[in-house]
Image (cartoon, rainbow, N blue to C red; front, side):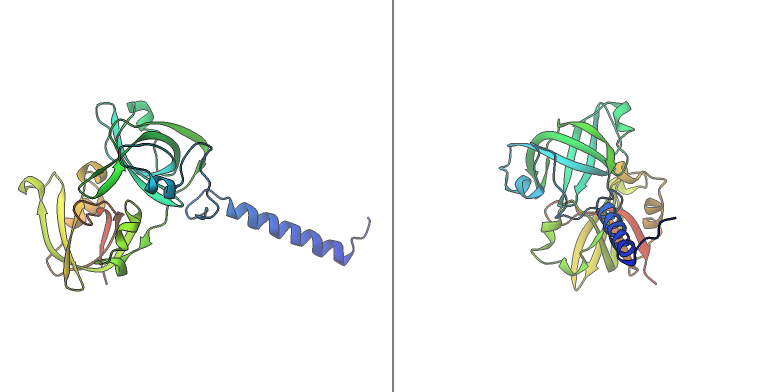
Length: 244
């Protein structure tokens, strides 16, 4: 068998390592695509271009499903995020069959109109979409605890986020009984914030819905969710744990 020189062996190893790094950088799994590496499909916007677009103008988004609310009457609301930013797509036109395909990580191309409601910038009702097969990505929650009470928090609007060490100040149910949304008032650094367990997002049999129902005023909690906005931060909670 022909002997391979030390130089050639090292060169082959270097090539293999480079190839593995390149492959890892293209991994479409959680956290696998950096903002710098992400490029939307031709004709679709970056998140910066979406932010710069005027309200009521048409927008075209290349993004990934992170979660959905319950499908109903030919429509579905989507929490979406790309490596460069996030979107709330309200009542997107969707068949029940296609709704079942919109699992977390699914890449979609969305065409709709930008709108704003009580501080929440979103894609208006009636947007259309198509699924891009063979590519998935889910976001890792960004810890934005330190941004509470600052002007920088809204820069993460609609992203999957985390908060650490919040204090429960009040728990109440919409319509005053379990089975509907849960309003969660939390405190941090002397200020209060209104979060929400959105029943169409989590359902009533989920761990988060059950856990919130057992919390007491004064409990210290860690929260994950989507940074929705309604006249101020109004995070839609997807996970909550009592801090040790």
